[in-house]
Image (cartoon, rainbow, N blue to C red; front, side, top):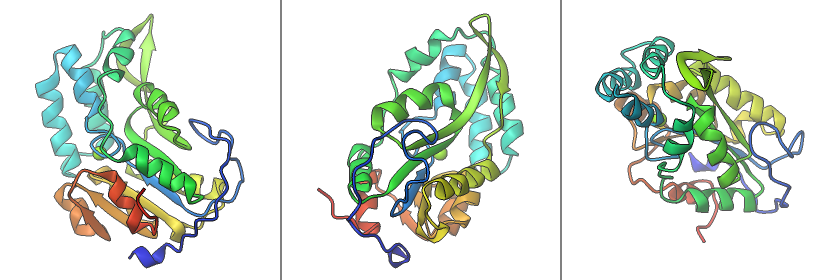
Length: 240
Ligand SMILES: [Mg+2]
């Protein structure tokens, strides 16, 4: 399947932004990699870290597991989990953000993709409040996630803005591919949960990363070692 991506290492370095579309608008890229965040880009499930602060971890863990195995509708499960966070102060974002563990190989992966003229984004059923600082720190080209609603400095337990579910992840990948002028055949999606299946279905290469059963069954490739640097040779890029 790696042959689906014909990647050349002639990319020039470009000014790098964080978040959507910053610095790269309509600049042709060699290819685009889009990663899931929770348990893929990072080792953690962010909502569980937030729930631990809210005292609702057991409840949230059960809902998360059922959602990731495809037993529960994602939006309903997201809303149910977010509701348990009501009352947390916004300072919890910085507190939890400091504890996030980036998956082994992420820095190498991002550097390798950029050196080869590719773009890399992260799309998450988790939350912008945690993803944005991480995306800026890592130099991701694109990042998108859900937003937790805040009033008077506290989480309401609701969500604001569009829901990033499986369909929205796929739509986001299409949008970013179009933004950097990359055909879908030159895209790769990497994820571990049922929520990643829609975007994985439209890419040139789909990778199940230490993934749940439904994702393993439908991916082009399965990676079981939690080292994202291993993605580079699959993209035709030599590891440094
Ligand atoms: Mg995940």
